[in-house]
Image 1 (cartoon, rainbow, N blue to C red):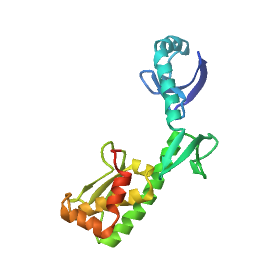
Image 2 (image 1 turned 60 degrees about the horizontal axis):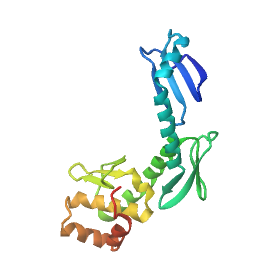
Image 3 (image 1 turned 45 degrees about the vertical axis):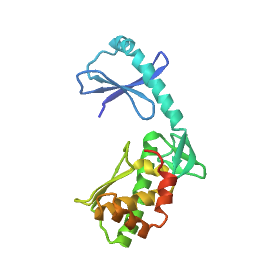
Image 4 (image 1 turned 180 degrees about the vertical axis):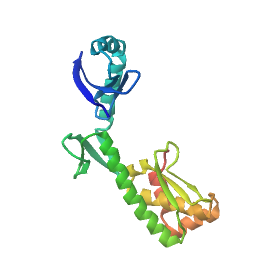
Amino acid sequence: MARQSTRIIWRHFEIYIFKKAVKNLILRIDNEGKFKLSVPYFYPLEKLEEFLIKNEKWLQNAYENYQKTLKKQDELIFLGHKFKVILEPNLSKARLFKNEIKTPNLEHLQIFIRKNARIIFNFYLKKWQRKTGLRVKRISLKTMQTRWGSCNHQKAYINLNLKLMQKPIKAIEYVILHEIAHLKFPHHGKEFYAFLLENMPDFKQRENTYFKNLP
């Protein structure tokens, strides 16, 4: 933990300096867009100017990338609906309103998404385990680029993509049943699809409606 911190304004950048038990200067930008610079305890602050001049281009690029991230996060698709994301630093956590999600920062927004994913995914996992008699030993939440879910049928482990939280509930439920089905049928053969049809007669409609593209 830093024993001493100093706030400076350099050019148009606001930088927080923390003296720590480090050998080299470490410059970063956090999830709130604040620049933080860790320096050794006995590093002379008058030498910072030289370091900042050398890293001015990095500071500018980091700031611009953060602004782009904010613009991308201005809206969020959550459970099939579009919400406006509003940053309110005084909040202690992200909160859902009618057409808005208010959050103190982007990190708390991700915590909000993951927490709700756990609740929703576990609800439908329990539902379909009960109906099919199949059992999942472990569920993992991941951000995947090419799959909505995956299943290790030998270990009874299921991975679910956090991006599913952008989809409507009917889509999430379909993926969960799809992966549970792989516990019994580790392939996409006729038996697999017959099992889906028996348990979810509209599975093909859900598949075509919600999963035309990769995540």
